[in-house]
Amino acid sequence: MGLIVAEELARGVRKATRGFWRRRAASHPHGLVLMYHRIAEPSADPWELAVSPGNFAAQLDVLRHSGAVRLLSEMTEALGRPSAPRRQIAVTFDDGYRDNLASALPVLEAAGIEATVFVSSGFTGSESRFWWDTLVQIFLETPHLPRRMDISFGGRRCTWSLGQSPGRFRRRRLLRSVWKELVRLDPAEIDSAVQSLADWAGVSRSANPEDRAMNHDELRHLARSGQIEIGGHTLTHAALTLVPPAVATREIADGRAALRDWTGQKVESFAYPFGMHDTAAAGLVRDAGFKRSCTVTPGIATSATDPFRIPRLHVKNWPADEFEQQILSFVGR
Ligand SMILES: [Zn+2]
Image (cartoon, rainbow, N blue to C red; front, side, top):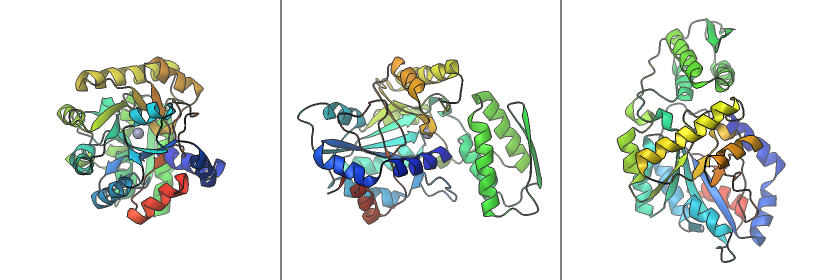
């Protein structure tokens, strides 16, 4: 999730137009990796991370007629072979929301489509919302907020004046500012700051079951469905380019070890939290034993693509026809 998703998308689209990718797709065997987060209908979704169950079923129907839909791991391995299919598509989910099991899996099973689910293992079994969802709850869903906010972010005191009744634009700007303060902190500091914010706004951090991460049983159930590859997404969704290298190393390795222990799967695919990556982060992911990693930069993969910089298309709550147009704008007919 994250604002960075939107920023990277915008930057990526500017840099490499969809026409460039379409020309490339016309002459190279290629893969298109789709990025989902939630199959749900939350009341506020500022980062457009949720797709409704109805639109998701309609999108999978489109996919079945669009190319060879296969697991990310199979797709990337096939791209390196001379016999690679002309077009492959892979479905991925980030974060490990419970709705991936409750709402996405039944639709994937009915469509006979496999998917990769990237799980931030430190949230597994948590009764609280993911911290970015608590921010959305505080800033976009709480009708009355105190007029002044004075919070310590990792020892740095920040004061904001909200005015009497901040409108939606002001609330979104605040959400963005606070998110930027939090994303660079270490996990304990994030937790403490989010608790302070929740106390300040008078909201509970405990999540409805459908809004939280999977617990251990649910994750095992998903992994054993035969339909899902589990991938790494660090322990606490750490911004790998912002935290110290020692923290990044531990986040990547411990996250992978937990998922391997819980699911019995190999855990060879990774997705960069918030899409944040650089050469150092890619090296750490490779050194931890992963074979591939996904970004949030839009594009297609070919045999020339760096396996630690696989682009993805951020799928939004599009109906079938718009979804098909979005796919075709990258890969052509
Ligand atoms: Zn994520």
